[in-house]
Length: 467
Image 1 (cartoon, one colour):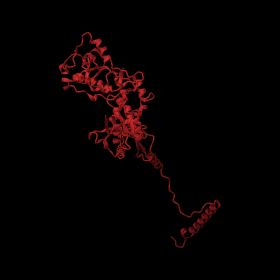
Image 2 (tube, helix red, strand yellow; image 1 turned 60 degrees about the vertical axis):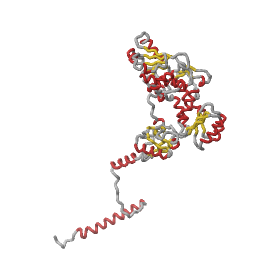
Image 3 (cartoon, helix red, strand yellow; image 1 turned 90 degrees about the horizontal axis):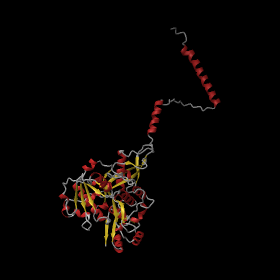
């Protein structure tokens, strides 16, 4: 290359490039001035927006971090279960929890769960067996964090406030409808069974303790013989329990005790009217065996192996030798054990008991009074602690005294404080009317006695006041 020739990039190109840059800068300055734009001499770096896929992913993360507070709670979530258990333990430090049941949805299901437990309180340790426990089921109000869905227990309901967690009793039925009649038996089905029937006797219209003693004896013999008991499922209520002061026939046994539980506790029970209709069709002509026993002193061991379809105990007309419970005395006492566990309060009355207890503190104390006014006053003043809920049970209590005591002890209650539970506008009254085929049912004296005693027995500290 000839060194005498000028290089374009060394000389001619640089001056022209400098001129061009200066011209461009001048033009830009003029434009900015004319447009009145701010002049920024700093250098900015352009950052492109994130890809569409990344934007969509961020949106999903935002949505996933929110919580649908209207959706039902997952009460089976172990985290919620443990939180509820811990909340119950912290809320009731005086209660020794034995075990917890699995939580179930409450009402409304989006903000509550029901949970049951068995426990023993400090106050019951001195009045009951150390191993005895009571059952409760409560409603837990649960809140959720709107972003993280983290749980928190807001409050715990009162005694028996969580009915969804209550385990139904085997064979329990809804008291709003009468139990359907059993399907008719064929001759072969009827003949294949074995029956025991009590005929006559002096137990009709007697006080209920007498009636229940005789009923338990009949149940004991039927169970020992492994026979179905033929039983009249209506009874005559003694005059002492009725408003008119006269015996009242036609009271259903199901008004007072759980008949379904009774059926399941023995070999079986058949309604008396239905049985004799079937017997007239298949047994009255001598086609089926019948054994008649007319002496209550004949022990069931004497005919326990009898093959007859029907065994009838016939009771005479002379009291007290014609009482059913006489069968369980003497020699029979060794083999007949009355099934007391077969007798359970009717569901309709249990609902009243639960409502009364739920309106008081769950660890209330109870006093059963059979004493004069002065003895009762003294015992209450000795036994009632300030601030404790106390239920006063018993018949013939001096109401003037009770009202005077309630002025001093605001937490003192007795049965008539809760009469709204069985008035004509109550749920119990409507249910019983439907159960009774549309005929209203009176909350009679025996119902009062059953409910009164059951509430008393639920007390943590039970005190008897005798004359």
